[in-house]
Image (cartoon, rainbow, N blue to C red; front, side, top):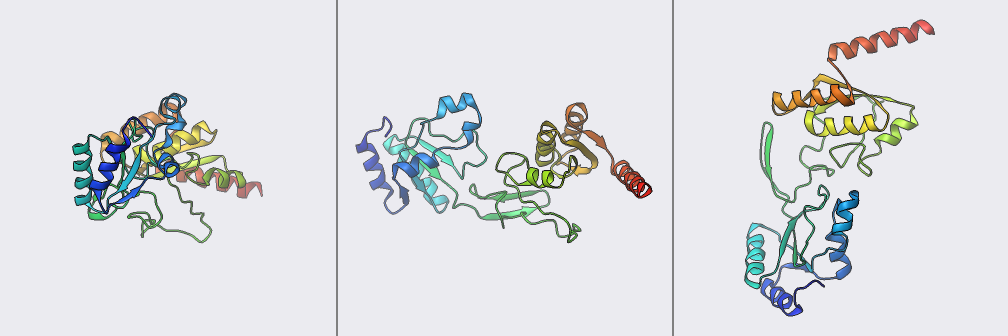
Length: 248
């Protein structure tokens, strides 16, 4: 329990009525955490911080209802979804209510390059919108498909890509995809620091703007990867294949 009085919380719970409320201390403490423990500094500052209860609204009207009740009773309110992409930003510092918006996951509309979804929508969950491979992508039966749950594929727990590559003796990666400055850059940066040789394909990645795309290319060529065009990469691969055939 934090500094809030049990009386204030009891009044708040009564005011919220039939909403989905969790008060079990173990569950509340566990779900009040995010990935702040990646940082030794944040871990020292945030370890032990917790809400007093969790409220899970089912729609926008219930979100407004919870916020209004917290304001009336002067109870702190921290809004978060799954907490899977946060590093301390959504930890309740003063107790109160943790507003769990994971149920607000509807896809409201999509347009080329943009979409509007509920605050609880998961970008990397199986069967989430745009989770599937692009339908026009050619996938061979021998291809390995690796699912990831973070922007970078090498973040611990994000995927089994590193283990798969190691099991096949692969030490070189060719990075293509979208977004240049998000998933692709994150994966390339981590790969280089894990001693992979990284080739970042300049015209095989895409961002929302040329400025963002080119900024990442500058970062890659300066520190993290060899930057090549598709033509250059296919040329090297063809030369390598010919060399192997000649050696056999």
